[in-house]
Image (cartoon, rainbow, N blue to C red):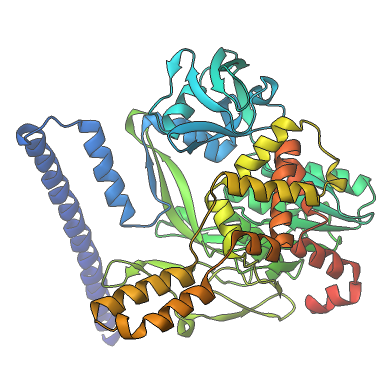
Length: 549
């Protein structure tokens, strides 16, 4: 009898719970239906009665984007007009002439033609001003509009009219569009006789295949240790990250698992193949721009004690996105899950679910950060990206160097110089001579380069406040002395920071003569993170001690 009463009570509880869930689901469905109806009637009324004509497609897209913006930055709507962007994001491929363009003043210029691309083969150079494309003027157009004009059907020839410095009349250049495949591994090579280097820039559909090819070739060259550079890599496809980790860890190793609201996104990803470099000492470089798939690779290798991580704390994006098809050939990239690396930690740094009262997202406080352990017992932590084993502070550039970049004057000088000197020394031999540096200083004077330091801005603000509060007359002598002490001279700063500016200029020149690949090749011998990796990989005792082996 007692058993029956207990059973009856349990059934009653289950019925109540199930009923409550049904009610909650009904309430939620009603809320959805209600607000969809409000939105539809609002749109109809605005369209009918607003004083000016509206474009239904534009206003609806604005509404969708505003709605998704309240969730997180990674949930994005792509209208039909942006399908090429989706293709580029997932495959690294698009149809065009293969160049980076940018706005400079009122003009759109060629910033960088890719090596051996149609733009490169047509003779387009950095700094060329695009005047027209197939007879259609680019005057007043933004970068996106000009980019659309350059893209199109592969195999079709287009004619660009460009203006180049030192040329009296505009030049005509013909380029044949083709499918441009942006490599995920733009460079790999030797740092020394025993150490290989791979730069992985993105996780598109062929990333793992390109990394495999690089590892295989480097091994054939006698490489015994490897540096994998993920700096600046904002991520991409999850399956590519899993496959790349599998190259270094035993079959069956847990790499990452995802957990979402919908059970179909709860998946565990393990190494399902034998590794191709199971014992090769490995260093992974990360920085504050290494995100998502980069953090899966670096975090999993750290948790499995398979690589020494060097650089800065990574970005902290532990969210998984899935591209979903919508009506009328539109798409939605939606956050569907969080990912967790082998130690069990999620490295998502920001909390988009619980926002601050002002609407901003909150960063996980230290009190909520949890300690985990790697496979050998090393301590690691969640809640804010991947912390490297060897931390290297980022470069703090002088104000003058920052302004040279911001004002883009180094780009102008390098292009000007290269037009007058088409040939350059080999990458290994290239140096900024004293004569080149003096020429650069004169170029800055001719082009009236100037800048204001933060100290000078603060003093100007102090003087303004002193005048408002009527203290200026009595403090003028002190303020004038401070202004004199904090004044700067372009010549003085150019001499004081010559080494730093020369180093930056060298990279600019190498990119101009030898493309982006040349800069990566140059950095393998002049980058402090890479040099530190070489040092650690060369010392087996230090390497094993860091990994607690």
